[in-house]
Image (cartoon, rainbow, N blue to C red; front, side):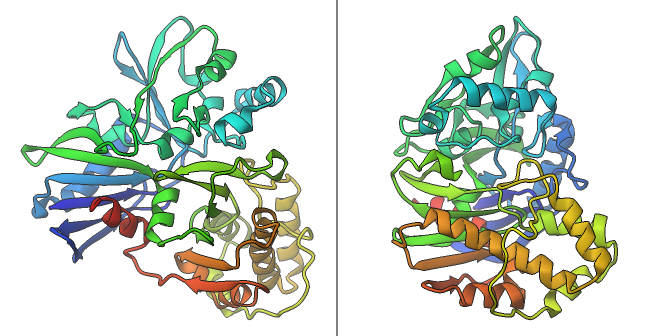
Length: 417
Protein backbone atom coordinates (compact mmCIF):
# COMPACT_ATOMS: atom_id res chain seq x y z
CA UNK A 1 0.00 0.00 0.00
CA UNK A 2 1.00 3.59 -0.65
CA UNK A 3 0.27 6.73 1.33
CA UNK A 4 -0.39 9.75 -0.91
CA UNK A 5 0.59 12.80 1.14
CA UNK A 6 0.07 16.51 0.42
CA UNK A 7 1.76 18.86 2.90
CA UNK A 8 0.06 22.09 1.90
CA UNK A 9 -0.10 25.64 3.16
CA UNK A 10 -3.56 25.28 4.71
CA UNK A 11 -3.61 21.61 5.72
CA UNK A 12 -1.89 18.23 5.56
CA UNK A 13 -3.94 15.70 3.59
CA UNK A 14 -3.43 12.05 2.78
CA UNK A 15 -5.17 8.99 1.42
CA UNK A 16 -4.20 5.33 1.09
CA UNK A 17 -3.78 3.74 -2.32
CA UNK A 18 -4.22 -0.02 -2.27
CA UNK A 19 -3.09 -1.61 -5.52
CA UNK A 20 -4.71 0.73 -8.08
CA UNK A 21 -7.61 1.98 -5.96
CA UNK A 22 -7.92 4.89 -3.52
CA UNK A 23 -9.33 3.85 -0.14
CA UNK A 24 -11.79 6.69 0.38
CA UNK A 25 -12.42 5.97 4.06
CA UNK A 26 -8.69 6.48 4.70
CA UNK A 27 -8.80 10.16 3.69
CA UNK A 28 -7.30 12.30 6.45
CA UNK A 29 -6.97 16.07 6.80
CA UNK A 30 -5.09 17.69 9.67
CA UNK A 31 -3.67 21.10 10.53
CA UNK A 32 -0.79 22.57 8.48
CA UNK A 33 2.79 22.70 9.73
CA UNK A 34 2.08 26.06 11.33
CA UNK A 35 -1.47 26.68 12.56
CA UNK A 36 -0.73 30.38 13.02
CA UNK A 37 1.16 30.58 9.70
CA UNK A 38 4.48 31.50 11.28
CA UNK A 39 7.06 31.77 8.50
CA UNK A 40 9.82 30.12 10.57
CA UNK A 41 9.45 26.84 12.46
CA UNK A 42 11.86 24.58 14.34
CA UNK A 43 12.71 21.50 12.29
CA UNK A 44 11.70 19.20 15.15
CA UNK A 45 8.31 20.92 15.41
CA UNK A 46 7.69 20.59 11.67
CA UNK A 47 8.66 16.92 11.73
CA UNK A 48 6.46 16.28 14.75
CA UNK A 49 3.44 17.69 12.90
CA UNK A 50 4.12 15.48 9.85
CA UNK A 51 4.73 12.32 11.86
CA UNK A 52 1.64 12.94 13.96
CA UNK A 53 -0.33 12.84 10.72
CA UNK A 54 1.44 9.65 9.63
CA UNK A 55 0.64 8.02 12.97
CA UNK A 56 -3.06 8.46 12.29
CA UNK A 57 -2.62 6.40 9.10
CA UNK A 58 -0.49 3.77 10.86
CA UNK A 59 -3.16 1.06 10.77
CA UNK A 60 -2.88 0.81 6.99
CA UNK A 61 0.73 -0.43 7.19
CA UNK A 62 1.84 1.40 4.02
CA UNK A 63 5.22 0.63 2.43
CA UNK A 64 5.64 3.85 0.42
CA UNK A 65 4.90 7.56 0.82
CA UNK A 66 4.28 9.60 -2.34
CA UNK A 67 4.64 13.26 -1.52
CA UNK A 68 3.89 16.74 -2.79
CA UNK A 69 4.18 19.91 -0.78
CA UNK A 70 4.08 23.68 -0.70
CA UNK A 71 7.12 25.20 -2.39
CA UNK A 72 9.60 28.08 -1.83
CA UNK A 73 10.80 26.59 1.46
CA UNK A 74 14.14 25.48 2.89
CA UNK A 75 16.21 24.56 5.88
CA UNK A 76 19.99 24.39 6.06
CA UNK A 77 22.28 21.78 7.58
CA UNK A 78 25.73 22.91 8.70
CA UNK A 79 27.88 20.08 7.37
CA UNK A 80 30.48 19.84 10.14
CA UNK A 81 28.35 20.15 13.26
CA UNK A 82 25.21 18.70 11.63
CA UNK A 83 23.11 21.50 13.07
CA UNK A 84 19.88 22.54 11.38
CA UNK A 85 18.56 26.00 10.78
CA UNK A 86 14.82 26.48 11.32
CA UNK A 87 12.45 25.39 8.57
CA UNK A 88 11.65 28.55 6.57
CA UNK A 89 8.46 28.82 4.50
CA UNK A 90 7.45 30.93 1.51
CA UNK A 91 5.92 33.49 3.88
CA UNK A 92 9.32 34.60 5.18
CA UNK A 93 11.30 37.67 4.15
CA UNK A 94 13.29 40.40 5.89
CA UNK A 95 15.13 43.58 4.98
CA UNK A 96 18.06 41.60 3.57
CA UNK A 97 15.62 39.79 1.28
CA UNK A 98 14.65 43.13 -0.24
CA UNK A 99 18.30 44.15 -0.69
CA UNK A 100 19.10 40.82 -2.34
CA UNK A 101 16.14 41.18 -4.68
CA UNK A 102 17.34 44.63 -5.74
CA UNK A 103 20.87 43.32 -6.24
CA UNK A 104 19.79 40.50 -8.52
CA UNK A 105 17.49 42.75 -10.54
CA UNK A 106 20.32 45.27 -10.93
CA UNK A 107 23.26 42.95 -11.65
CA UNK A 108 21.77 39.89 -13.40
CA UNK A 109 19.96 41.22 -16.44
CA UNK A 110 19.05 37.74 -17.73
CA UNK A 111 17.89 36.33 -14.38
CA UNK A 112 14.34 35.58 -15.60
CA UNK A 113 15.57 34.06 -18.87
CA UNK A 114 17.83 31.65 -16.97
CA UNK A 115 15.70 30.79 -13.95
CA UNK A 116 12.25 31.27 -15.48
CA UNK A 117 11.41 32.91 -12.16
CA UNK A 118 10.05 36.33 -11.32
CA UNK A 119 11.48 37.30 -7.98
CA UNK A 120 9.04 37.40 -5.08
CA UNK A 121 10.23 38.15 -1.58
CA UNK A 122 9.46 34.60 -0.44
CA UNK A 123 11.83 32.99 -2.96
CA UNK A 124 14.49 31.17 -0.89
CA UNK A 125 17.60 32.45 -2.69
CA UNK A 126 16.84 35.87 -1.20
CA UNK A 127 16.41 34.60 2.35
CA UNK A 128 19.46 32.59 3.45
CA UNK A 129 21.42 35.40 5.13
CA UNK A 130 19.88 35.21 8.60
CA UNK A 131 20.45 31.44 8.81
CA UNK A 132 24.08 31.10 7.71
CA UNK A 133 27.59 31.90 8.93
CA UNK A 134 30.40 33.00 6.66
CA UNK A 135 33.19 30.54 5.84
CA UNK A 136 31.00 27.52 6.54
CA UNK A 137 29.41 24.92 4.29
CA UNK A 138 25.69 24.23 4.33
CA UNK A 139 23.65 21.47 2.78
CA UNK A 140 20.46 22.87 1.30
CA UNK A 141 17.32 20.94 2.18
CA UNK A 142 13.61 21.40 1.42
CA UNK A 143 10.34 20.21 2.96
CA UNK A 144 10.50 16.61 1.60
CA UNK A 145 13.77 16.14 3.54
CA UNK A 146 11.81 16.51 6.77
CA UNK A 147 10.58 12.97 6.20
CA UNK A 148 13.90 11.30 5.40
CA UNK A 149 15.97 12.75 8.26
CA UNK A 150 15.11 9.67 10.35
CA UNK A 151 16.11 7.25 7.59
CA UNK A 152 18.20 7.48 4.45
CA UNK A 153 18.33 10.26 1.88
CA UNK A 154 19.09 9.86 -1.83
CA UNK A 155 20.19 13.53 -1.93
CA UNK A 156 17.80 14.05 -4.84
CA UNK A 157 15.23 16.77 -5.51
CA UNK A 158 12.45 17.03 -8.09
CA UNK A 159 12.85 19.91 -10.52
CA UNK A 160 9.47 21.41 -9.58
CA UNK A 161 10.73 21.90 -6.03
CA UNK A 162 14.22 22.90 -7.18
CA UNK A 163 12.89 25.63 -9.48
CA UNK A 164 11.02 27.22 -6.58
CA UNK A 165 14.33 27.96 -4.82
CA UNK A 166 15.13 30.64 -7.41
CA UNK A 167 18.44 29.50 -8.90
CA UNK A 168 17.70 26.54 -11.15
CA UNK A 169 18.35 26.85 -14.88
CA UNK A 170 14.84 25.76 -15.74
CA UNK A 171 15.72 24.72 -19.32
CA UNK A 172 18.80 22.68 -18.40
CA UNK A 173 17.86 21.39 -14.92
CA UNK A 174 21.17 22.61 -13.50
CA UNK A 175 21.93 24.85 -10.52
CA UNK A 176 23.04 28.42 -11.28
CA UNK A 177 25.65 28.67 -8.55
CA UNK A 178 26.79 32.12 -9.72
CA UNK A 179 23.57 33.54 -8.28
CA UNK A 180 24.47 32.15 -4.86
CA UNK A 181 28.03 33.44 -5.16
CA UNK A 182 26.74 36.93 -5.91
CA UNK A 183 24.64 37.11 -2.75
CA UNK A 184 26.67 34.89 -0.40
CA UNK A 185 30.31 35.07 -1.56
CA UNK A 186 31.84 33.66 1.64
CA UNK A 187 29.56 30.67 2.07
CA UNK A 188 29.64 27.23 0.41
CA UNK A 189 26.48 25.32 -0.41
CA UNK A 190 26.08 21.61 -1.11
CA UNK A 191 23.19 21.11 -3.49
CA UNK A 192 21.03 18.01 -4.03
CA UNK A 193 21.05 16.32 -7.42
CA UNK A 194 18.13 16.96 -9.77
CA UNK A 195 15.99 13.92 -10.53
CA UNK A 196 15.89 13.23 -14.27
CA UNK A 197 12.48 12.80 -15.89
CA UNK A 198 12.99 9.08 -16.62
CA UNK A 199 14.40 8.34 -13.16
CA UNK A 200 12.60 6.55 -10.34
CA UNK A 201 11.63 9.51 -8.07
CA UNK A 202 13.03 7.88 -4.94
CA UNK A 203 13.98 10.44 -2.27
CA UNK A 204 15.05 8.05 0.48
CA UNK A 205 13.33 6.36 3.38
CA UNK A 206 11.92 7.01 6.82
CA UNK A 207 11.82 4.71 9.82
CA UNK A 208 8.16 4.25 10.64
CA UNK A 209 6.01 1.57 12.22
CA UNK A 210 9.08 -0.61 12.90
CA UNK A 211 10.12 -0.74 9.27
CA UNK A 212 11.73 1.25 6.50
CA UNK A 213 9.21 3.13 4.35
CA UNK A 214 10.25 4.53 0.96
CA UNK A 215 9.63 8.20 0.18
CA UNK A 216 8.98 9.21 -3.44
CA UNK A 217 8.19 12.31 -5.50
CA UNK A 218 8.68 15.48 -3.51
CA UNK A 219 6.75 17.34 -6.21
CA UNK A 220 5.63 20.94 -6.01
CA UNK A 221 1.97 21.17 -5.04
CA UNK A 222 1.17 23.59 -7.86
CA UNK A 223 2.38 21.21 -10.58
CA UNK A 224 0.80 18.23 -8.85
CA UNK A 225 -2.59 19.96 -8.66
CA UNK A 226 -2.44 20.94 -12.33
CA UNK A 227 -1.49 17.36 -13.22
CA UNK A 228 -4.42 16.13 -11.15
CA UNK A 229 -6.77 18.53 -12.94
CA UNK A 230 -5.94 16.72 -16.22
CA UNK A 231 -4.65 19.94 -17.80
CA UNK A 232 -3.96 19.47 -21.50
CA UNK A 233 -2.08 21.45 -24.09
CA UNK A 234 -4.30 24.21 -25.42
CA UNK A 235 -5.99 24.74 -22.04
CA UNK A 236 -5.45 27.24 -19.25
CA UNK A 237 -5.42 25.87 -15.72
CA UNK A 238 -6.55 28.01 -12.79
CA UNK A 239 -6.19 26.61 -9.27
CA UNK A 240 -7.72 28.67 -6.47
CA UNK A 241 -6.65 27.67 -2.98
CA UNK A 242 -4.68 29.31 -0.17
CA UNK A 243 -2.70 30.83 -3.02
CA UNK A 244 -3.62 30.80 -6.68
CA UNK A 245 -2.01 30.38 -10.07
CA UNK A 246 -2.87 30.56 -13.73
CA UNK A 247 -0.90 28.25 -16.01
CA UNK A 248 -0.70 26.92 -19.55
CA UNK A 249 1.55 24.25 -21.00
CA UNK A 250 4.28 25.94 -23.04
CA UNK A 251 7.98 25.74 -23.85
CA UNK A 252 8.63 29.44 -24.45
CA UNK A 253 10.41 31.81 -22.08
CA UNK A 254 7.78 34.50 -21.39
CA UNK A 255 8.28 38.22 -21.88
CA UNK A 256 9.92 39.26 -18.61
CA UNK A 257 7.91 42.49 -18.44
CA UNK A 258 4.68 40.55 -17.89
CA UNK A 259 5.56 38.85 -14.58
CA UNK A 260 5.01 35.40 -16.10
CA UNK A 261 7.09 32.44 -14.87
CA UNK A 262 8.34 29.40 -16.76
CA UNK A 263 8.17 26.28 -14.57
CA UNK A 264 8.97 22.60 -15.15
CA UNK A 265 5.94 20.35 -15.58
CA UNK A 266 6.73 16.64 -15.73
CA UNK A 267 8.80 16.63 -18.91
CA UNK A 268 7.14 19.77 -20.26
CA UNK A 269 6.92 23.39 -19.14
CA UNK A 270 4.17 25.71 -18.01
CA UNK A 271 3.88 29.46 -18.29
CA UNK A 272 2.32 30.69 -15.08
CA UNK A 273 1.36 33.72 -13.05
CA UNK A 274 1.58 32.95 -9.35
CA UNK A 275 0.77 34.57 -6.00
CA UNK A 276 -2.60 35.82 -7.24
CA UNK A 277 -4.79 36.71 -4.23
CA UNK A 278 -6.96 33.85 -3.03
CA UNK A 279 -7.82 32.21 0.29
CA UNK A 280 -4.86 33.70 2.15
CA UNK A 281 -6.02 37.25 1.41
CA UNK A 282 -9.66 36.57 2.24
CA UNK A 283 -8.73 34.79 5.48
CA UNK A 284 -6.67 37.82 6.49
CA UNK A 285 -9.56 40.18 5.75
CA UNK A 286 -11.92 37.96 7.77
CA UNK A 287 -9.67 37.92 10.85
CA UNK A 288 -8.13 41.39 10.76
CA UNK A 289 -10.60 43.66 8.97
CA UNK A 290 -14.12 42.24 9.24
CA UNK A 291 -13.59 40.41 12.57
CA UNK A 292 -16.94 38.60 12.64
CA UNK A 293 -17.86 34.93 12.31
CA UNK A 294 -20.23 35.24 9.34
CA UNK A 295 -17.64 36.37 6.76
CA UNK A 296 -17.91 33.33 4.47
CA UNK A 297 -21.68 33.24 4.87
CA UNK A 298 -21.83 36.86 3.70
CA UNK A 299 -19.59 36.06 0.72
CA UNK A 300 -21.79 33.11 -0.25
CA UNK A 301 -24.86 35.37 -0.39
CA UNK A 302 -23.44 37.82 -2.93
CA UNK A 303 -24.82 37.61 -6.46
CA UNK A 304 -22.73 38.45 -9.49
CA UNK A 305 -23.76 41.44 -11.58
CA UNK A 306 -22.38 41.39 -15.10
CA UNK A 307 -20.97 44.88 -15.33
CA UNK A 308 -17.74 46.52 -16.32
CA UNK A 309 -15.42 46.81 -13.32
CA UNK A 310 -12.60 49.17 -12.61
CA UNK A 311 -10.09 46.41 -11.89
CA UNK A 312 -7.61 48.84 -10.34
CA UNK A 313 -10.13 50.41 -7.97
CA UNK A 314 -9.51 47.83 -5.26
CA UNK A 315 -7.01 44.99 -4.99
CA UNK A 316 -6.62 42.11 -2.56
CA UNK A 317 -2.85 42.06 -3.08
CA UNK A 318 -2.11 42.80 0.57
CA UNK A 319 1.07 40.73 1.03
CA UNK A 320 4.42 41.95 -0.24
CA UNK A 321 5.10 38.75 -2.18
CA UNK A 322 1.73 39.00 -4.00
CA UNK A 323 1.50 39.61 -7.72
CA UNK A 324 0.72 43.33 -8.31
CA UNK A 325 1.27 44.21 -4.63
CA UNK A 326 0.74 47.78 -3.42
CA UNK A 327 0.95 48.85 0.21
CA UNK A 328 -2.13 51.03 -0.32
CA UNK A 329 -4.36 48.02 -0.98
CA UNK A 330 -5.06 47.21 2.66
CA UNK A 331 -6.03 50.84 3.36
CA UNK A 332 -8.54 50.69 0.50
CA UNK A 333 -10.02 47.45 1.86
CA UNK A 334 -10.35 48.91 5.36
CA UNK A 335 -12.05 51.94 3.88
CA UNK A 336 -14.51 49.78 1.92
CA UNK A 337 -15.62 47.97 5.06
CA UNK A 338 -15.88 51.16 7.12
CA UNK A 339 -18.19 52.67 4.53
CA UNK A 340 -20.10 49.36 4.49
CA UNK A 341 -21.41 49.97 0.99
CA UNK A 342 -21.67 46.60 -0.75
CA UNK A 343 -18.29 45.74 0.75
CA UNK A 344 -18.61 41.99 0.14
CA UNK A 345 -19.57 42.55 -3.48
CA UNK A 346 -16.64 44.94 -3.88
CA UNK A 347 -14.25 42.37 -2.36
CA UNK A 348 -15.42 39.56 -4.65
CA UNK A 349 -15.39 41.83 -7.68
CA UNK A 350 -11.79 42.77 -6.92
CA UNK A 351 -10.92 39.13 -6.25
CA UNK A 352 -12.29 37.87 -9.58
CA UNK A 353 -10.90 40.69 -11.66
CA UNK A 354 -7.36 39.82 -10.60
CA UNK A 355 -7.87 36.64 -12.63
CA UNK A 356 -9.25 38.60 -15.56
CA UNK A 357 -6.15 40.79 -15.45
CA UNK A 358 -3.85 37.75 -15.30
CA UNK A 359 -5.71 36.01 -18.13
CA UNK A 360 -5.24 39.04 -20.36
CA UNK A 361 -1.47 38.72 -19.88
CA UNK A 362 -0.99 34.97 -20.12
CA UNK A 363 -3.39 34.64 -23.06
CA UNK A 364 -2.70 37.94 -24.78
CA UNK A 365 -2.94 36.43 -28.28
CA UNK A 366 -6.31 34.76 -27.47
CA UNK A 367 -4.72 31.47 -28.53
CA UNK A 368 -6.44 29.52 -25.74
CA UNK A 369 -10.21 29.36 -25.22
CA UNK A 370 -10.56 26.57 -22.64
CA UNK A 371 -10.14 27.01 -18.87
CA UNK A 372 -9.93 24.20 -16.31
CA UNK A 373 -10.90 25.68 -12.94
CA UNK A 374 -9.91 23.72 -9.84
CA UNK A 375 -9.60 24.38 -6.12
CA UNK A 376 -11.77 24.34 -3.02
CA UNK A 377 -14.56 26.39 -1.49
CA UNK A 378 -13.62 29.67 -3.17
CA UNK A 379 -14.54 28.46 -6.62
CA UNK A 380 -17.90 27.24 -5.28
CA UNK A 381 -19.04 30.74 -4.30
CA UNK A 382 -21.91 31.62 -6.63
CA UNK A 383 -20.33 35.00 -7.42
CA UNK A 384 -17.08 33.32 -8.48
CA UNK A 385 -18.84 30.58 -10.45
CA UNK A 386 -20.96 33.07 -12.36
CA UNK A 387 -18.00 35.36 -13.00
CA UNK A 388 -15.97 32.62 -14.67
CA UNK A 389 -19.00 31.23 -16.52
CA UNK A 390 -19.54 34.68 -18.06
CA UNK A 391 -15.96 35.22 -19.22
CA UNK A 392 -16.24 36.14 -22.87
CA UNK A 393 -14.40 33.86 -25.29
CA UNK A 394 -13.77 30.99 -22.87
CA UNK A 395 -15.24 27.56 -22.28
CA UNK A 396 -15.04 26.77 -18.56
CA UNK A 397 -14.59 23.27 -17.13
CA UNK A 398 -15.24 23.29 -13.38
CA UNK A 399 -13.40 20.49 -11.63
CA UNK A 400 -15.59 18.94 -8.91
CA UNK A 401 -14.85 20.03 -5.36
CA UNK A 402 -13.97 17.03 -3.25
CA UNK A 403 -11.81 16.61 -0.19
CA UNK A 404 -9.84 14.20 -2.34
CA UNK A 405 -8.66 17.13 -4.40
CA UNK A 406 -6.39 17.66 -7.40
CA UNK A 407 -3.12 17.26 -5.49
CA UNK A 408 -4.09 13.78 -4.25
CA UNK A 409 -5.46 12.86 -7.69
CA UNK A 410 -2.18 14.08 -9.19
CA UNK A 411 -0.18 11.93 -6.76
CA UNK A 412 -2.41 8.98 -7.63
CA UNK A 413 -1.56 9.40 -11.31
CA UNK A 414 2.16 10.01 -10.70
CA UNK A 415 2.53 7.01 -8.40
CA UNK A 416 1.16 4.79 -11.18
CA UNK A 417 3.62 5.82 -13.89
